[in-house]
Image 1 (cartoon, each protein chain N blue to C red):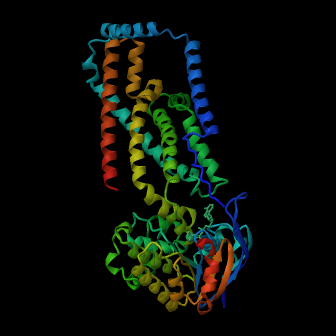
Image 2: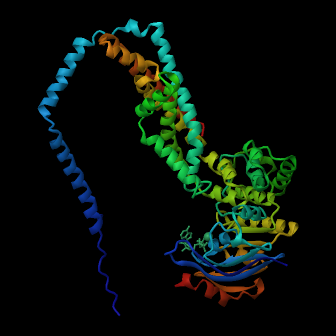
Image 3: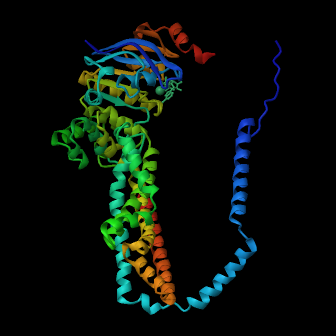
Length: 250
Length: 273
Ligand SMILES: Nc1ncnc2c1ncn2[C@@H]1O[C@H](COP(=O)(O)OP(=O)(O)OP(=O)(O)O)[C@@H](O)[C@H]1O
Ligand SMILES: [Mg+2]
């Protein structure tokens, strides 16, 4: 089953600025853990962020969970975004809030304004937050402030927050680039295991080709706004990598 | 092919920028000279006047009538002024927070409707001076504290609204994006991604606003808003110079106390980050 299908996606950040994505097509199937690799500036983050319209596409079509993303109004877009968990390179936690409140904030899309104001989340949500905090190994840190945690721990909070949405797709923008190699492997492993457990497909930007090969079943290679490679991980050859990273070698 | 390296040239101000920079400075200086000339400012006379001022003050305003400012009636007026600044500051800050949210470009709930409303609200409060607000409110509500508090409220909305909005526009956008991507609405984004980042700064600004409101409250009183300023006006009109001197001294003392208190409170808040 296709969860996400993108056709002819183009993005410019400003009317006069350069075209960052120059017509991208790809699909994410329900059992995919898909990596996007490519040199810095290729447009990987732009692509991921266009999927849930954190960046507005200038042309093309995005069909996400049977909705045409570009046609939705603000309210419909919020309802669709609830189904898409996002994990960020810089974690994007709320530093001055507790770990628990950070995780609960993943439920905001399902919570009314009054409850949000007084942080009165339903008991099911609190129980679920406790479960996911345990799952990512942070049971001992529930009441700490987010800025008291290490990088790896912060990203685990980010993962738990995304899972709170009961996502039908995970968007990961270099989830491990801010972490050291050992912690990176642990965190990637955790994300992959949870994605399998919950049967959620994932679309994941990765800098590190080695990590991509290790954890992902399919790889998309990007360069300068174009898709240069798309196929199963086993089919990625060194010559493909050379082509994708050609700009950097020069 | 021979690679010929000419050493790169560098200067701090390149041609067009240097022209703008020095040109602006020249215009400012020229205008300053022109204004002085236009005003016919006579420097020696100005210096002489300063000496005269000291003489007049010593002559007419000394010794200040301290007993007058220690009187029950005047002490009550000090309390009135304090209450006015608290009420005005509180109401002003409460109104300024939503307006600042509307008028912060990065997280405004709606850039086409709420943004202009917020900007216009804050700007119109700032555009009108607190004395003019007082005169306006006195003409509608009559003399007294209600007019004074209303005028101070408008003043505080303008003062705090601008500072709040600037603070909101300087936040980190990462958490905002995280909340948006989770499907949070603009109000929830404000609560969860903005408020935690600006809480400490807002508290400091609110205290500062009270401090400034207290100073403004004396002026507001002078124009009919009640409190210390009102006493000042009456005594000025009755040429009770010794009492006027004492009142001015008491205002200075109170402003210093307020300034010190607000500085100390703000430092405490900042430490609690
Ligand atoms: N908000 C923005 N406004 C204008 N241009 C932007 C913006 N964000 C990114 N760009 C430009 O878009 C291009 C692609 O950026 P993007 O972040 O998508 O690359 P990336 O592949 O994720 O790179 P990296 O591996 O360094 O994260 C870059 O040239 C960048 O300058
Ligand atoms: Mg990126």
